[in-house]
Length: 195
View 1 (tube, helix red, strand yellow):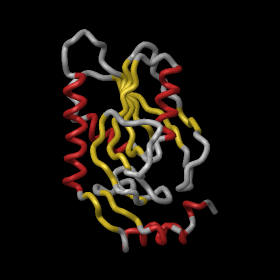
View 2 (cartoon, one colour; view 1 turned 60 degrees about the vertical axis):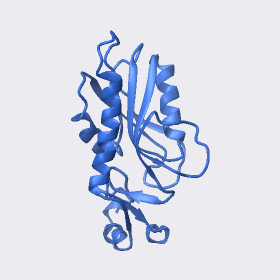
View 3 (tube, rainbow, N blue to C red; view 1 turned 90 degrees about the horizontal axis):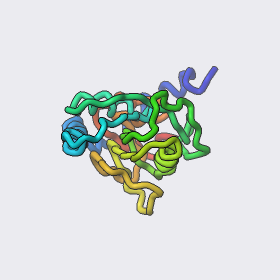
View 4 (tube, rainbow, N blue to C red; view 1 turned 180 degrees about the vertical axis):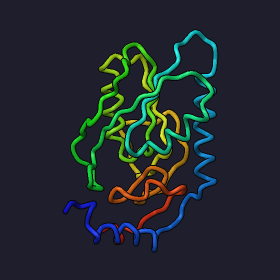
């Protein structure tokens, strides 16, 4: 029986929200998405001769953010995705693994990378470096949330929806044990509850 199939972990996933703290409700989340959309529209919804960007979502955390953000963008774009992770089924960072490389040609293009959260920044820094090595002319990073971890990160997002406290969070694409990406708000999980 796998980790995700066990009844113990399904029950633990259900119990996670019992003591959780709601830190951003659905309205605040939607305002954050609107903010990022407005900023991207200001940058790319102009007729300055620049080619329209390639937008890449980092799966699986960015799936909710991508889906809702894309409908708010008012300029032509090409969309693709990649799957890059440092976590797997764990909640501590590890080796960066590319599970899916974008199929679209990035050569000479402006690439907008969308992700759910800028946590320690190792994964997004690696993604940006790799895309530039693949020939992207520019890599723009937009994240739904930037976690305030109290130290310098190897990358700074160009666009940020909201800033999170340094807590373990779930909702709006962020998960615990693979669950709760579907919550419309952001909840802080007590550290003891996720052990």
